[in-house]
Image (cartoon, rainbow, N blue to C red; front, side, top):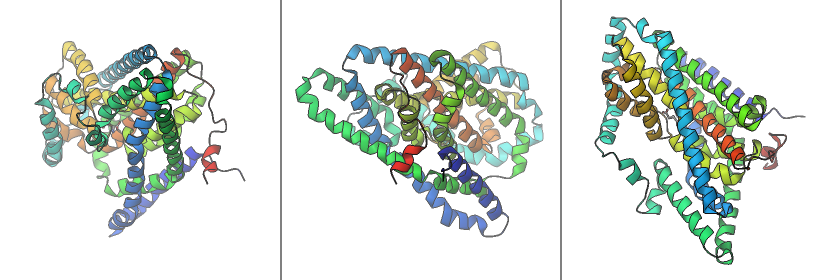
Length: 435
Ligand code: ASP
């Protein structure tokens, strides 16, 4: 019997999760049952993905960089990657700004709703503001300084330090290229093998994906706030979702134009990573799966994907930047403020930088939004307005973040002649091999 394709199985898992969540909220004690007996499986699933993120980056990047055999190729690829990432982010923020100015979701918020929400949620947003404050206190070159770890072992102990681990891996890879081949062979073979093992671990984790997302969504549903809030923020949420959907269309056009690959091919290949991004709200947790899908199913050679994707997961967040632009202007509208064109152009710059600075974890976009609000002189209290619907929007923007990384990896691969045919034709088959 033909097995159902993986993305359908994941979607089914999500659907069952929502149904079970809804049923369990309908009676007393149901929420606690989900929290005690179902939610931990979701957590285990996310943790197992996070568990392999750092080893994967280390092994894949060292292997990828040393396979390039030439440092000039690395700088060419690096330059293109960063350039295209910034470009797609600017497109995303601009799209968000156009939409929020057309739809004007903030105008539908009455003064009483605004006051009520600010009162109800200001406590919840406090920790976001505190984190943002700490980041604000650092100097302009702090981010650059933070790129360089003083100790690779301590850097590798936290998934938040991905850029530091990337820095070390690239540096190590360069060292490996520069020593005589026979001396580096053992080290290279070691990382080659290590990388294979990690990719096999991704396959194993993916077997559990439908169950993992089931648990994650059931827990989300029982913990979500009341539906009334969603209604009040409906236009705002719709504007963000519309913009995010627009970005997916733009990615497909970019892939078609630059790589001649059809949207169906691209979406089929990347969809399991998108579904995981949606369920986990974390590009970092999704990274192992994004890497695997892009290399095995979209035909991007490992030398490219192992560099472009970890960098993208940490600095390229088109969905987040679009959301930050929409949220900032929405809050301004809700407070009756008129933003000049100059301020809005400034929002493009600050949201681009803020998305680069956002960590690839749930809710990070909201922390960095504080900076965008501060720049434009919009009251930070407005965070309370968007807090209630942040999680579902976080899920959607993470999908766009991950899809954006995959798009850029295909474009960069094509431009350096490293886009081939996918290794796995029947794109679901190979998960079965691990059984
Ligand atoms: N959750 C997002 C990500 O991991 C970041 C954010 O927008 O909060 O990509």
